[in-house]
Amino acid sequence: MKKRIGSYPRVRIEGGGRAVVSQAGGVLLVETVRKAGLDTAISAALAPWRKARAVHDPGKILLDVALAVALGGDCLADVAMLRAEPAVFGPVASDPTVSRLIDTLAAAGPRALTAIRAARGEVRQQVWRLAGREAPDAGGMVTVDLDGVLVIAHSDKEDAAPTWKRTYGHHPLMGFVDHGPGGTGEPVAALLRPGNAGSNTAADHINATQLALAQLPKKYRRGRRTLIRTDSAGGTHDFVAWLAQRGRWLSYSVGMTVTEQIHQHVLKVPASAWTPAVETGGEVRDGAWIAELTGDVLTGWPKGMRLIVRKERPHPGAQLRLTDADGMRLTCFATNTAGRPIAELELRHRLRARAEDRIRNARATGLRNLPLHRTAQNRIWLEIVQIALDLLAWMPMLALTGKARLWEPRRLRLRLFTAAGQLVTTGRRRILRMARHWPWTGHITAALDRLAQLPDPG
Image 1 (tube, rainbow, N blue to C red):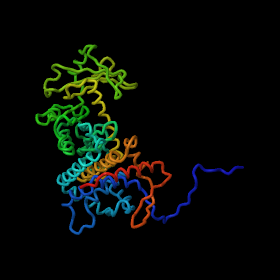
Image 2: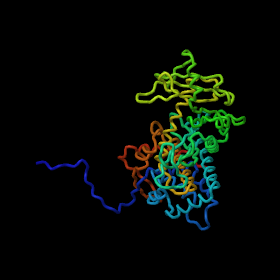
Image 3: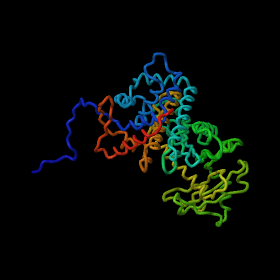
């Protein structure tokens, strides 16, 4: 009779291990903070809220919470995992001190939010300069995607309300800079709204766009080099008119609702006017055609606006809507970009779907729920989430190459940040030795080398 062998080896557990560092890969985020100058910028911004004889700097406290969120935390108390590793993250404030700072900043209202956002915008310019050809504006253009997010509330929090999906919670409006096919994206706007906030609210879209533009380098805050993309929630007269206003001249690619007027114009489009849609590689998209609508359908809209419609065979199982025609799913969008083929413009608008990836990553980085009760507190939390997402976008942009630069937060945590290390002190120097057998140790050490080669801020 053979003795049964288990699938996993038995390991004896003993406490008291020394010089072992968990979350050692988090040093990548720490070095990103240092090279970007985010620590000094946030500390300077929050200096007015530092009390006399305070032990902990408010900027360091806020950054510690953001680092905890970037490493996978979803509440203020998760800063404890940084507190447990002072050799990597330095001294970390206690939970009551963290809570008091959040309450203080929440009481300051717009002053604190403006200070934090100004520091982020200043550092963003520095990071883009360091990134060079890897920066999102390397091609001379910046694309900002706006999209709403439903955040479920499991308790009766301030401004929580029923949502259009019959859930209960909040409906923030987010903005993300698209890094293109070679990268991810970074947040530039987060507007906290009640759960019953309307999707087509032009004032909210204008406010979110203003927040996003303030985060960009000054040369991109107006002009055709900045593209604003939205789904059909942004297809309102007031918002499109604001984008196209004289002196602002922003480029836009805005989804539009297929109204009865648009539907009737589509039925009149001759077969010869339909152009095959294309994929990112230039090949023809199977079962999809596009056409540009002209005439009185553009009456009342800003001058220079183009209305482009796409018809496509619905995927199996999809239900057609009343506005669809001849068994084809109809969608349309508006843009003010002239001189480019409509197939190219339609592909550019379709790539707005990358914003869904940014939202999924945000949910995995502190936006799964809003952990605090009052709206003012949760506005500070949204800024913390954005700082965490900034770091998760900046670190790959500055330090990773190849496919690793496309890794999403979950994979970064699993492969890089959770790596263990051993802290060795020799010759008055502290050295963090990563596990040699870990498959991604090479990625960590190479990324740290690239960060070390970057110039220090100032």
